[in-house]
Image (tube, rainbow, N blue to C red; front, side, top):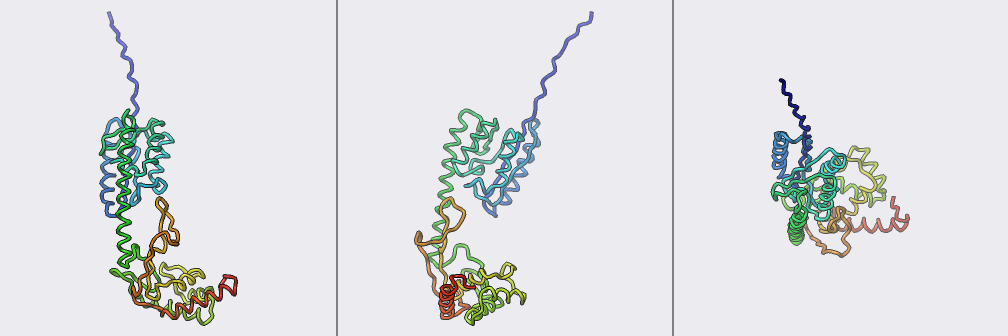
Amino acid sequence: MKVIKQLSALPKREKLKVAAYTRVSHHHLLNSLSNQVSYYNQLIQNHPDWEYVGVYSDDVVSGKQIKNRKNYLKLLDDCRHGKVDMILTKSISRFGRNTIELLETIRELKQLGISVRFEKESIDTLTTDGELLITLLATLAEEESNQISSNIRWKVRKKFEQGIPHNPQPILGYRWKDDHYDIYESEAMLVRKIYDDYISGITPSKIANRLNEDGFTTRKGNSFTRSIIHNILNQEAYTGILILQKTYRRRGKSRSIPNEGALNKYIVEAAHEPIVAKSIFEKVQELKQKNNLRKGKKND
């Protein structure tokens, strides 16, 4: 007599869609970023229950603000569209250093059923104690970031006190070498000509047009404009003087604003060899003031 046994089909287990996120904040860590990407590529693709989604990387960008991390934002967008079930990342500080933004993101992902696994801290955000631990560790990460920022501000202030710019700006007619500006004569000649032409009565617009017609360009290889000529005529560095911390950034802001007394300014006399005599610079400023009054500040 035949005996027939029916074996029920096992439900097909769907693979977890897994992605990884990596980030470094400095150029000298780019090799580390490459190693992280390779590591997560192999880890995810070699796991039998995982489906490889990709490794999302942001290089040379701070973790303080999400808006500056393009691939991080792309990862979150893919999560919202159901493309990711789990995110792997090295540590909490790699995922984010702003406590509020970090927790808002993790809570949103948790509502979507997406876990974030932090390898260094051995935390999975979908576990019961995950969010509590994240809150504590993220706070520490933010404090660490604030300490780093404080150290950077201290170094910047010390540079200013020594008469050295924190980030030397490119100036037509000069090149930064060691700890000072050196004259770059082929451009310095243009600067002197601009000052002489303005004193002789030629307007900034006409000066710019003449320089462009003669084939001259700015340091960046662009055409001269009226505003560029005005900036050159206002640049006290051509007299050998540096004014440091003319602008600054408020904490959490990316745009610089004029320093109108909020912080110390540092005036460095004889910081480098002048291209324009101080008397000529002052004469230009007097002429600009007169022209502004006469032409309703159009000075063109």
